[in-house]
Image 1 (cartoon, rainbow, N blue to C red):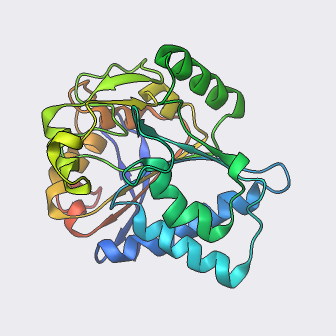
Image 2: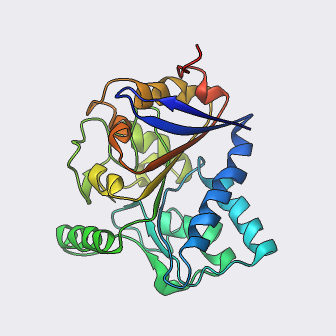
Amino acid sequence: MMSVYVRTGVGGIVHLLIVENSDRTGKPAAALLRDVIVAGGTKGASICFATGSSPLPAYQELVAMHKSEAFPVEATRAYLLDEYVGLSADHPQSFGRFMAEHLYDPIGLPQDRRHRPGVESSDLDAACKAYETALKEDRLDLAVLGIGANGHIAFNEPGTPRHSRTRVVDLTDDTRHANARFFDKEEKVPHQAVTVGISTILDARRLLLLASGENKAAILAQALQGGISTNVPASYLQVFRGELTVIADEAACRKLAFDNE
């Protein structure tokens, strides 16, 4: 693993950890998560979690760390970055179920510490406002992020403004097609989701971005070192005022510019 600092497109500095392949993103990411959880102490840390293949190695490693180190998690408050509209928490394809299976249940996170948007509510606007209020009052210690091939973070697709907050979004055909592999067929992929907004993410004290694969190389470079644009929502990370850590494999880092180049 190589630890370096790279300059963003607006002159900021990002801490970048480069690992050999996607499987090795897990340990350093899990170590960061553990440190945030432990630092929360009896008050508890508040963490917003991404789902999918990018953060999965981190969650698997965190489960292993918890099994061997037995650090307390009871006070930790967990939030979801996004969730499909209409899916119950125990639906096989819900993000809440994903987190329960891969992290919450294995480490014994109490049920009342698991938070997700009210995607089954008859008043989605009110549910979004309530979730945004909860996140604002809690002030996230860490948000775990992935990055899509088109630069989306959470379900903030290209065109999302900087000031966006938690809201209902219509999923693009490309996003639904990409997520169809988790469902029996594409027709079953929900057409809407609730997502936290760009400003919601930037309000966190700390951010962890995970990326792997050659297919993420161009967009990672554009997000961190290109111009800030609504066409690349992840580019707003360049204006983040807290500590941004990026953990990526060698393939995903191939198009980044380093100061010694």
